Length: 195
Image (cartoon, rainbow, N blue to C red; front, top):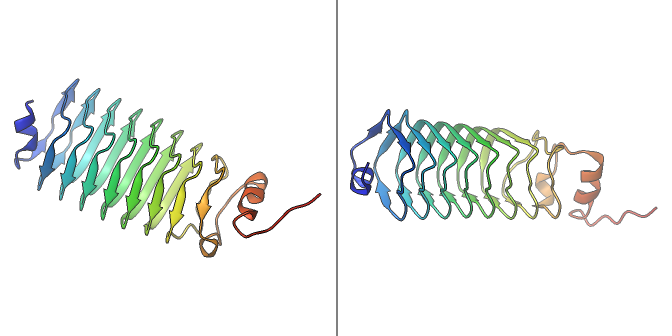
């Protein structure tokens, strides 16, 4: 596939893309469905008003890519690099992120339904004004990660590293954490624990 093929408005359906360099492109008004991207470089791209459905990314680099007004349905990221990715005003449904590097990821003004994150690193990422249902974090690094205007009630972070996590106190209600994490979160409330 050429870069021109990828940037055209023509839909991309049932394609297997392996070892492709599709970086530094602008893609708009495109449907990408039933595709598999493997060892493909998709970094520094801008996707606008793009619909992704039943797409799997394996060992891909999407670093510094911007997604604006995009829809994602039944998407898997496996062992991917998503450093500095920006998702603005996106809809995400049935998304899995496994064994991926997602430092400095920014998820802003988006709606999420069924996001499952396993064994991934979201250090210093930001979740801003997120509407969510069924957020699952398993063994995820959330070091210095910031949750702003995002309700976390019912979300279980007990297997995650939440060192220096930033959460507004009003959104702590109903968050599930382990005992050591509760001590970490007490700092947010201004509680000083003494022995």
